Length: 88
Image (cartoon, rainbow, N blue to C red):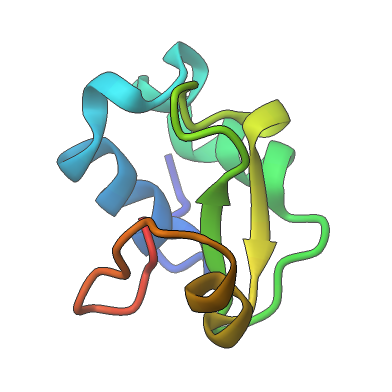
């Protein structure tokens, strides 16, 4: 897929490994999932930001995720921050 060096690769990898059943179908795909996540979520991303679901009862997807700083992430939700800092 050619995205292993992309800044969002580790976010995608953690999503599909840790939360597979909670991730939209488009992002789960082994061959195209990372490309779709990059297309959907690159806007607004800056290094060290956390991805958060807007509605925790819905899947991780373009319409249901947003980027937050670690500080804002921790203060705005009760979702646990993973030890590696990816916030997913």
